[in-house]
Length: 174
Ligand SMILES: *[C@@H]1O[C@H](CO)[C@@H](O)[C@H](O)[C@H]1NC(C)=O
Ligand SMILES: *[C@@H]1O[C@H](CO)[C@@H](O)[C@H](O)[C@H]1NC(C)=O
Ligand SMILES: *[C@@H]1O[C@H](CO)[C@@H](O)[C@H](O)[C@H]1NC(C)=O
Ligand SMILES: *[C@@H]1O[C@H](CO)[C@@H](O)[C@H](O)[C@H]1NC(C)=O
Ligand SMILES: *[C@@H]1O[C@H](CO)[C@@H](O)[C@H](O)[C@H]1NC(C)=O
Image (cartoon, rainbow, N blue to C red; front, side):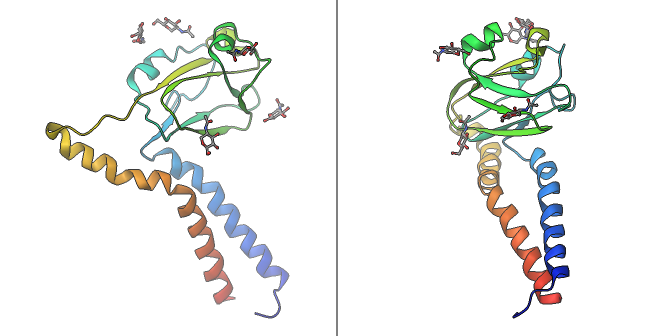
């Protein structure tokens, strides 16, 4: 192609936008992706201990915060800051409505809302556990789990590939 018409560029951008916009929704349902509070999301005046008590997070899993960006945000802090709702040293902060963060190592991670709601229970402490080794009795279950793992890791590549495919099919059609 010697000349790229402006309409082609616009079409390409549109496709990219659609791919990027739909990706987070697809992401949320994937194994190894944990949406804090499930359908309720990240809100104030809710005790998240039932969620943390029933959620198992392993290294490499993603944690997702869905919230009203006009009211809330989410930040990662250390244990002391979590306990006292101290917002002076944020390790990570996100204030758009869907925030995904990959938790790479075992151990505790602490999240708070920096907009005052930390004092209204909007704080979360999660423990990333060592991934259990398969036992003979649960082998079937674990085979299923490990089979879907590369899916999570390769998500970025999948998205990129989708975008690339869309772009290429567009170019060859126009
Ligand atoms: C979650 O577990 C902790 C410690 O095991 C316990 O103190 C707390 O009551 C539990 N919360 C709920 C809602 O079950
Ligand atoms: C934790 O964060 C607070 C501020 O939010 C800071 O004063 C303190 O030094 C930090 N503690 C560690 C162990 O990094
Ligand atoms: C949103 O977060 C960024 C850093 O990630 C910060 O610079 C910005 O001030 C925040 N905006 C609001 C409205 O809190
Ligand atoms: C996990 O690793 C990724 C990629 O290196 C990085 O972007 C992310 O910030 C890490 N997560 C945490 C909680 O540090
Ligand atoms: C949530 O409830 C548990 C007891 O079920 C309590 O130990 C914990 O401090 C509460 N968390 C918050 C943020 O109030």
